[in-house]
Length: 381
Image: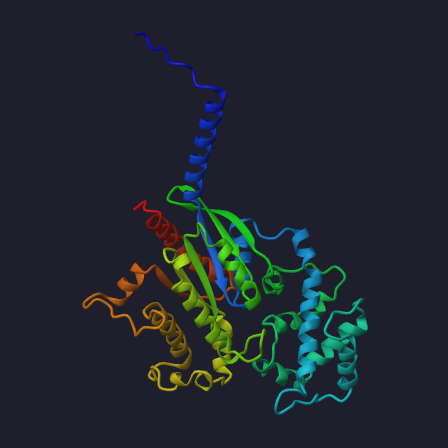
């Protein structure tokens, strides 16, 4: 009997085209290096996103800079109002040392926590005089006792430039500008790697407690998690409750992520961030052992800053080797700890997110790690 193959129907042709397209898209997505930025609030995640834009997408346009001017002015007002408002609330309280500044302080208090409707010369002059007052500077040195944004000094020092009608934010201003992340954002960029362009997708989600419920929605397809912990937060409390130690919260949230079944295969890269602020705090006499008593006898042969770095790194390693509810997981005898940690896809770096050169150097190493992680987790090696 003669068999004649019938040509495929139009429906089958369309179905085949769709299937081929889906397979092609799947392969394309598998080649994309997807990174999720996580960490508690104000740990520096959004600043890393900005640095990727500077390093890999030609930086900020003039329009983008001008759009941030209202936020920068809001940062200035929030900073000076917070300082003035907390002078008599901290214990012991601090007084203004210039008599004429008392009226200016009341002027700022009368405006309230929200920025003024109009930025007048009187307003800027008041801020400049108050910021120069030794009493305000003493209050600033005790900022760990209340909630003050890290960029306060940067913008208050630049008040003369920012008040200018022709002011255009500098790159550093853009990096220091603080706007709370309340949504999920994504940045896409390409980096040269072994003769080709490798595509990266980096996601940023809010770190405050109320925003963390969104994290699970972006876990799928993530090859690496970049977890930021503000190392300088050892003496500060959460903005959300004013009680919980920020650094302890950072460690706890990292532990929750590291052992989560949803991202068990994803590589974890920890940035112990804000090293510049950490070093300055230690040089100014801030004591880590006041908040972490176990630090008192830790590696006493080293200087305090190096001790602090190693102490925090060890905290991360303890988390990575201690399953919740169990004793420390024992390493295989004879296996070096670095090799064991590497097999768990954990890497730790010390960073300053506002320093473009620092981020460039660190991310140059991290990109190789991320590509290797994605190859390993996708089964391509």
